[in-house]
Length: 168
Image (cartoon, rainbow, N blue to C red; front, side, top):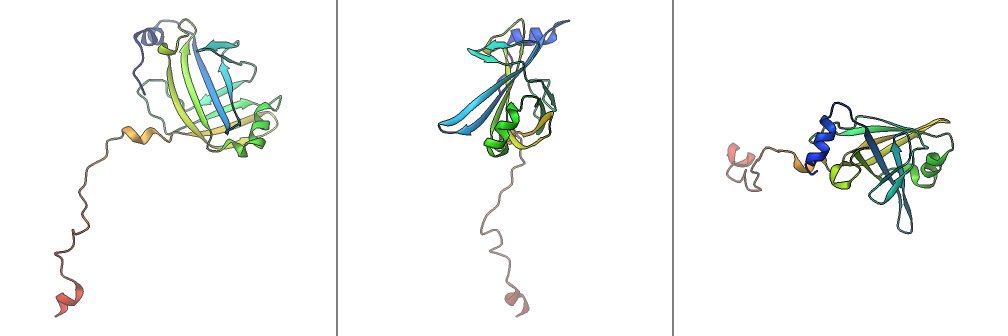
């Protein structure tokens, strides 16, 4: 993940700001694929040449608020009144394994360089008549973890006597 731009940081730290969460829900593969773009905002949002719909209510839990945060998972709850999302679930094997890109921008700075994005994968989905819940996991978060170094060698135990050598 890249560091936030100075303008993003200024907007985030302002006394009043208008954050916008944008969700790119990828589905399918090959020719039968697409992206459902949803904005958590009071109206449709144009960002980076794409239009994000605001007619599907969306809420989230577990998404990071800071740019340096790593979150193992999150949940998205999408309104299902017109069955748009549930149709995707049925036609795309529950959307399992599909990519979701979550972007945070501010209404006063709608530029790609003034945004922060996180990438998730859909682990599983649940739906009922009014809502679809997507459980998200971050598959890339382990790449920047500090792991203790250990040296393992296949001949590490070559100098240890075998059971028969000890008995004799």
